Amino acid sequence: MKPKIQPMPDGAILFDSDLLATADARWFDADRVEGARTQAGRGSVVFFDAPFGACVLRHFQRGGMIARLFKDTYFFTGRKRTRGFREFKLLAELNNAGLAVPAPVMARYVRKGLRYRADLITRQIPGAQTLAERLQARTLDAVIATRTGRVLAALHAWGVWHADLNAHNLLIDGSGQAWLIDFDRCRKRKPAMSWQQANLDRLLRSFRKLQAQRHMADFEDVFWHSLLAAYHRNLAERYARGERA
Image 1 (cartoon, helix red, strand yellow):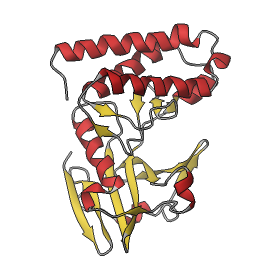
Image 2 (spheres, rainbow, N blue to C red; image 1 turned 90 degrees about the vertical axis):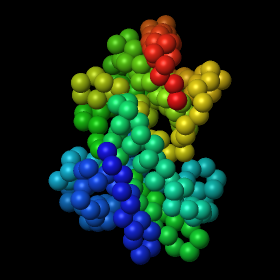
Image 3 (tube, rainbow, N blue to C red; image 1 turned 60 degrees about the horizontal axis):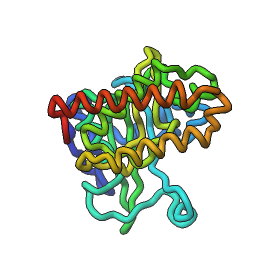
């Protein structure tokens, strides 16, 4: 993967030049992309097929109270600090390292005065369901837990702190492989048990919010304990091999 910047009159596009010769801004216009579609439960993203593969388009939007004032705009403090560019660069690094994250295709920011809007296009993970969906369908098991734990261990060994680790951002693809998505506001940190455990605690809270025990009577005894066992075992193995950020 080779990131390249393509300037625009009102912003810029960062793209994978190993995949594309140039970046076409029209792919960011979901209303004009033929066959673009949303998916039930994931209305904030758009799925589409392109000559360079099946992709996902996400428009960056704020959450919480501030969204009432600035729904999808951010103060511009430099090209490198725009939301889409930061997520693209982190995903590119992790993807090049072979970690289970979606490959970035293009990121864009568009300025208007002191503020900007941002978008990100990534490769679609085929046949993916979120852990939240699998939980509600009662199709979570110890195998999925083990694979999820390994993915989280790999990310934490690389020092990746996930800002919103929850059951909606962990996916299982059609072959049963686990993936982690949505790296907005995520960053690299020196590996430490304090923030790593806080990340895991956040994930467990999201499962409890989804009433995991209601959908899977032995959720914590089977799924969660299997996830933690795989996580700690894989993290220790990676540290033993010197795989630290």
